[in-house]
Length: 136
Image 1 (tube, one colour):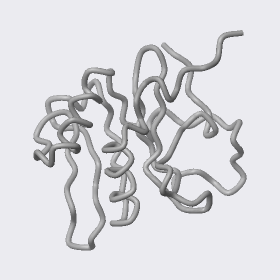
Image 2 (cartoon, helix red, strand yellow; image 1 turned 180 degrees about the horizontal axis):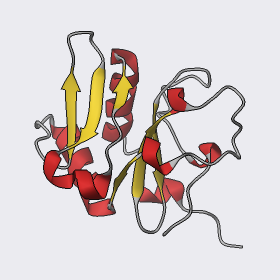
Image 3 (cartoon, one colour; image 1 turned 45 degrees about the vertical axis):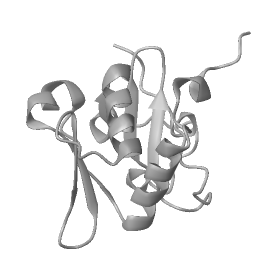
């Protein structure tokens, strides 16, 4: 099983300020993780590992489907469910048919967090190339 990434390895939308909570994305050779940085404790640092159970884990093809749906404004009915609740928060969760592979985490984002994420997707900020480490 791949190692758990650290807080510092996740990226968030460029439109987000450093202090702003956000939808966080991590990509490696095998997977794409989505996480909510509000789940981190105040004592956590950039080197702290993010618990896998706090993430939604997609393969790269699944994340591309998600990004394409967000870019075109099509509803997401597979892989990832994004539902706006009565409280105004957007809940991200795996679709029932994908929960066993994607995970059971439920992530909650306010309108600004959600909008920054969608804007970043539309501007290709979460493409795999943004996560490639320089060769040593």
